[in-house]
Amino acid sequence: MNKTRVALVRSRSYEREELNKALKRSLSLLGGLENVFKPKSKIFVKINHLSPPSPAESAIVTNPLFTKEVLLLLKDLDLSIAVGDDIQSKGKDGFLISGYRKICEELGINLVNLKKKGFREVECRGQVLKKVYISLLVLDADYILNLPKLKTHSFTAFTGAVKNMFGVIPHGLRLGYHRRFPRNDVFSQMLVDIFSCVPPHLTIMDGIEAMEGEGPAAGNPRRVGVILASRDGVAVDAVAAKIIGFDPLDVLTIQNAHQRGLGVGDVKNIEIAGDEMEQVEVRGFKHSAIAAGFLRRKIPAFLYSYLPSRLIFIPEIIKAKCTACLECVDICPTRAAKLDNDRLVGIDESLCLHCMCCHEVCRFKAIKLRQRPAGRIIRAADSLHSKLKSLRER
Image 1: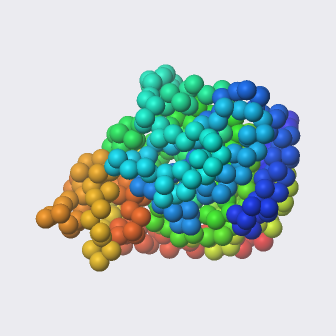
Image 2: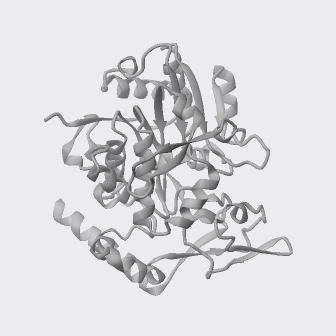
């Protein structure tokens, strides 16, 4: 049985010459772009571009310099290319601050906010979704190229290729799913459902400047210096997760997609081509406080309805940092974020779903996640367990 191949190539920076060389090497290890995409075809390039817009150096978005070099390689194949994501920007051009508007204009490539092209309902046949609305631009494409960013996540622990496809459904529906699926295990099943509807033909992950801590927006940039590429997006996530210190099958999106046969999540069944994983693994990479892996696995599913009050995180406003931009108020699916005289003063815990949408959207780091004592104990126990496991494996 042939193993799934993931190209793993080091690139220390977004400097054009080094990045171009690393990308070409990555793709050659997979047989080249020409063996994936046929000329004259329509290709949709899914970037990771959160709302509200953020500068590239924050490590919140797929770096536009990374995307630019990929697009230059695609242009050599004479493809009809569209780049996009579904973002909210309050009537402004949300792609300006990140730098995407500039690079796409320079290259003459169509850059699209997916909400402007519309969505169509399709059958899903997932574990929790039977139907879902998908971007018309995505459905109309002959090929999907997924360009995720390597980041941690305060609700799903890790975000990469699988979760990046969450952006092909409407913003309002994403908020609705946060209401419907407040448990991270069921939420992860929903993410895999969407991924199964529009599986990318190729995934190239920007792991040069990653995000650690409370990602995907409130964490801190961390240089990892890698590019990962594969026709199997689940395998890309598995290798990336392993590099930053996760057991990939502890990450619920990877675990669920692997179990469904949508990709390979077990690194023992993945062929690493290029650089050796041991050479690029990052020690001390900070995970989100939600990533209490071994204890979460030991908690029976039916207890999730009883234990969240002790294990979940409570978002709190840091008033000194709050600018009253109202992004958290706009995105909160239950209106738990409250205003008083146009100043954000707190979050109503009785309404809070703990979906972390407010924390994710705040680019000013004005929302912190407070743990209850039991949560801190679990976090400490999990950290100790991970250290002991690492020592045993050496």
